[in-house]
Length: 158
Image (cartoon, rainbow, N blue to C red):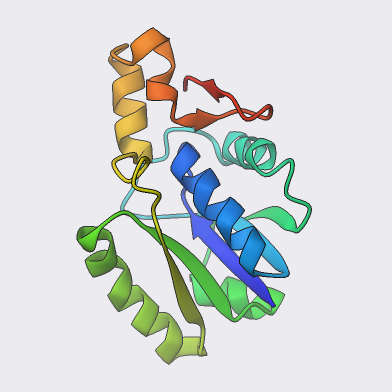
């Protein structure tokens, strides 16, 4: 079974990488896809986000990286033949945000949503917070609190 892990990934964090690794254990193939979100202002170009995702997934043989910056998520799912969407949730507020979209995706195209709860050690991490901390040069040792993955599995700043 193929699954889609969509997001803005701006930037990709260890939390994203954790959800991706766990999803890769559950599905035959996972497509991690940079999507356009009209409610967010992009900080990194899509090409850079794709490169960071490829690095984060380098050791996951059943993961591919793609982008879809025009149209709905269900349009992409239909184009590539995917019926399951993976969403990581850090807490109740994420679930409150995700549930209406999950219901609409199912209503529009029969796409199911599979929620993966965040690792408690990473549940406070968001792309927005990582970027804000990095811009303010407040991260310990300048590494954005160790929340950005590198190809070697270590951490790096934004």
